[in-house]
Image (cartoon, rainbow, N blue to C red; front, top):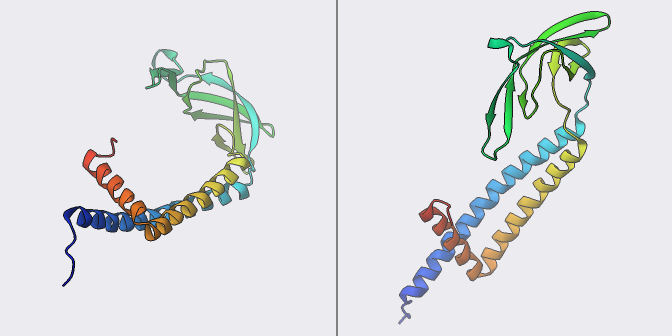
Length: 182
């Protein structure tokens, strides 16, 4: 004659089983995200910036009323600008005029100067900002290694300890029930 489990033991076992499955699914997803982060980090580390920097003059603001930028207030109370600028710059004795559209916290005005980057093989191809720093590549690689390792350690813990698996099951269940608002 087998001993019948109590309702509490059945719920505990069911929650632990659900937690083990969810830990495994999370580990697989974490591994895929980790691989993407590592690839991104390697790309940043191997990126060779061939662009040259130069100062360009803002010669026109082709928006209505000769305004260069429209502004708005973001969710944190900061002012942001969406600008349309016609710039002029000279590369190897040849003058270029391009229209760019910077968006950010800097407001520009006609007659001002802006630092741009251009491709030496195609000087009309203009970029703003700087290339990603190498330290960012190392950070992405470190996070890409750390997250899957921790996820697989959690899978091991849920396999070894029923209480860890039940905690995972309860946490996932509550997250589903509340829509992640806990």
